[in-house]
Image 1 (cartoon, rainbow, N blue to C red):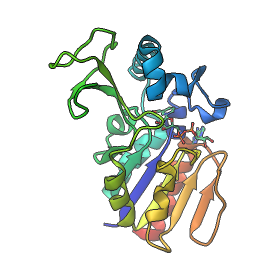
Image 2 (cartoon, rainbow, N blue to C red):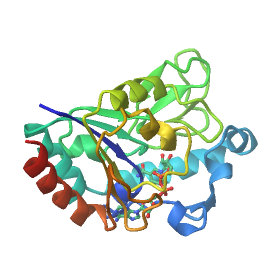
Image 3 (cartoon, protein in one colour):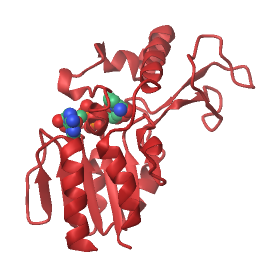
Image 4 (cartoon, protein in one colour):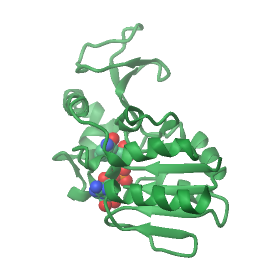
Length: 228
Ligand SMILES: NC(=O)c1ccc[n+]([C@@H]2O[C@H](COP(=O)([O-])OP(=O)(O)OC[C@H]3O[C@@H](n4cnc5c(N)ncnc54)[C@H](O)[C@@H]3O)[C@@H](O)[C@H]2O)c1
C-alpha cells in the first residue's frame, strides 16, 4: 500500500465545533495566544492558563469527530495512512485512525513541570496544587509558542517517506510544522484542502478550496481512483 501522509490543523476540527484561531484575528477563543499558550503566559498567570485549557478540555469531551476525520480513518483500508496533526484534540483517534502523531501535544494529557517525560492521562480539570509524584505542579501537555517541538524529527521522517501528502485545514503559519512539507521527496503529489488556502497550486500541488467535511471525501475518491 502507498504511504499517505496527512498533515492536519485546526480547520479539520472546525466542523466538530472546535474553533480555529487564525480565523479570528489571532485570538483563540477570545484570548491573546501569548497569554494562554506561551511559557511567558504560564509564568505570569498559571490560573488563567489552566482555566483556558480546562475549558478546552471540557469542550473537547462534548464534541464528536466529523466526516473528515471519519473518512481519513476509512482510508486505512486502501493506504498506509500516517496522520501528523497540529491539533491537541483526540478526534482523529476517536474517528478510528490508528497512526496519529501529535506535533503540539495532547489536551487529554498533562505533564510534570519537573520531568517533561512524566505524562499522565487527564480528563477532568487541572488546578493549581495538582502535583506530580515528585511534588511539582502539573501543566498541560501542550507545546506552547516558543517551545521546542520534540516530535519534529519523527514527523520529518514520515514526510520524507510519503508517496502522497494531504494537508488539511491549516493556515501554514505556525513553524516548524508549516515547513514539514518541504521534507517531501521532489515530485511527491500534494493535496491541500482549506476554504482559504494559503499556498498556490502548481504541477504537484492540487488545491480543494473548501471545508474539510466536503473536501476530504472528494480527496478520498480521487486518491482511490488515481493511486489504488
Ligand atoms: N482542534 C485543536 O486542537 C486546535 C484548535 C485551535 C488551535 N489549535 C492550535 O493552534 C495552532 C494553529 O495552527 P493551525 O494552522 O492548525 O490553525 P489556524 O487556526 O492557524 O488555521 C486554521 C485553518 O483552518 C482553515 N479552516 C477553517 N475552517 C475550516 C474547515 N471547516 N475545513 C477546513 N479548513 C478550515 C482556515 O482557513 C485556516 O487556514 C496549532 O498549533 C494548534 O495546536 C488547535
